[in-house]
Length: 161
Image (cartoon, rainbow, N blue to C red; front, side):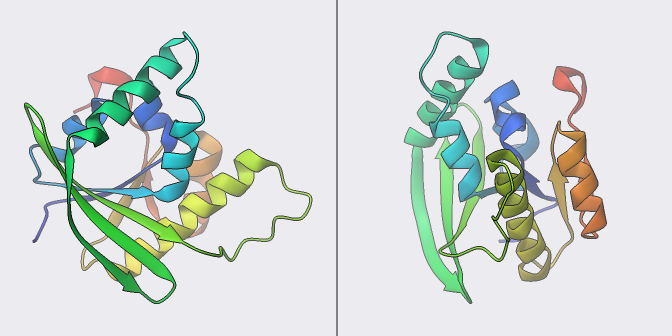
């Protein structure tokens, strides 16, 4: 399958609004790439009564409506392709890795997770035939992405299409 755009999403894009998955996918015209770390972070936010917790549960419901299309290994990475069928559709590649290359000594968890996500983004840039774009609301994560030569952008709330 060939897609118009390839987006690697940071966790905050989905916690801001779970339906961003459909907005960005544009009815499966674009491929959404989710590092497994994003799923872990969303999973950890499901309990509670704040908006962020609601969005985490909403995203879990979106994933419940998905079918696994295929699963493959490339080097140390595992790629699982999902197709979400709702009112709109989305194709999502979830990419995981057993052991990450990052040094975790004396580094806080949120920075470790950012680096894991960016390691998946770096792999994605090599694996897919088109340049990927890393989307995050976090300026520090975007700055790290730029330092790794990863194209990056912020998603400005609901005003950006």
